[in-house]
Image (cartoon, rainbow, N blue to C red; front, top):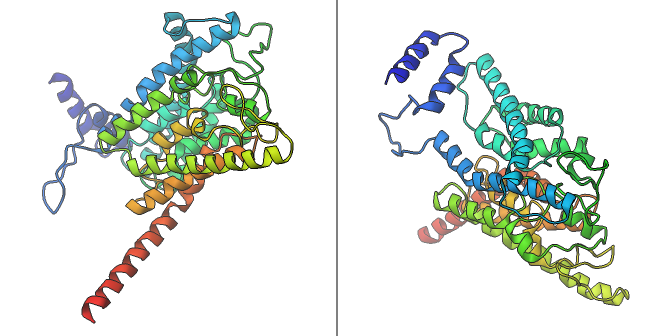
Length: 408
């Protein structure tokens, strides 16, 4: 009670000063918001923006912890050729590399939020609580911190504050940050160097693939290099990849939790999966038809499938597309962003289907950039209002037609 009273006294002290918004943000983070509904036709609910954001963060915590173990595991595997997964050494190695990414992401992002709130004299929104967690999970573990800081500043200012802050942004801020990183420093985002904690002889190769970048398996398939990871490794996440994108199993659990709490849209998630499967089946069918006709042999071979250098990703089994790269992570945690996604029920189905469809389309047709979910989501963020517009207009026309029929 003493601490709460002291904070209340300080809040009154800073009322009307330039520090009011910053202190209110700290007070709201620790306690319930002091602005509540007392009258009018409003829905009474215990949920507020802070609780919604915290729920999404809780859905990502298992993925974050797994990513720390996996970072150390990939490090020891690259050096020794064999390693156990659940060891304290793996966790410590991952923690040392991932914690600075979290600190920079939250430090720079929230710092800019506080500056804008102070200058524009508005409340600090809690929206960046989720973005700050997402960013370290979708970048390579060895990304230089200064690059991350520059990208976070760009994403918060251009993709968010320029449009009015949380709830007003057109593009997903986390994906805008990743797009900025990719198009400015592509070699850091999807290079062919193996990451180890403390380089061994400069660059160490492991099966000719990158040990931690987000496009590892997809890149090797596009280059027609053999991939030896089993389906079990891909599903549970014992593979190279960006920090939070490897474990499809934990991502699915996070998605189920978001649907159960009513925060994530099941329509978007399911329709995105359907769209990805449909596009994958189309490519598998084309590969099965074209490759024998061109004398290229079997369309699919090996544990997870490889083909000619022109058809490596086209012949990749459609259902396995969901277990590699950032497709599952993007569908669950970023395609469902309630601000930048479609708002109507039918619009969410169309929006999600096109995200999955375009993700596989970009992944297969551009071997230089095999991970297409980022561009697919950003593209559909732009078209989400258009989709909702035509869905609403179609409903209006149906109702007008029904009205004319009843009055005739």
